[in-house]
Image 1 (spheres, rainbow, N blue to C red):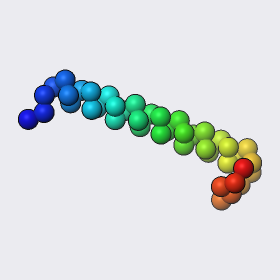
Image 2 (image 1 turned 90 degrees about the vertical axis):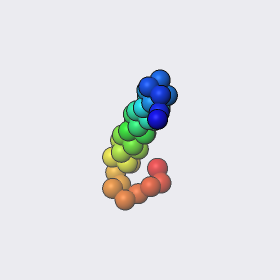
Image 3 (image 1 turned 135 degrees about the vertical axis):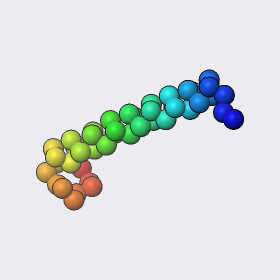
Length: 43
């Protein structure tokens, strides 16, 4: 049985990590659009 506090801490870490990943993905997408390559990974 997982204690409530531990569950909340894990859930908060999970959501923080997810939001951070989403920010990184959006930044990567903006960078791709700026450099005009849908398939170009290099800047």
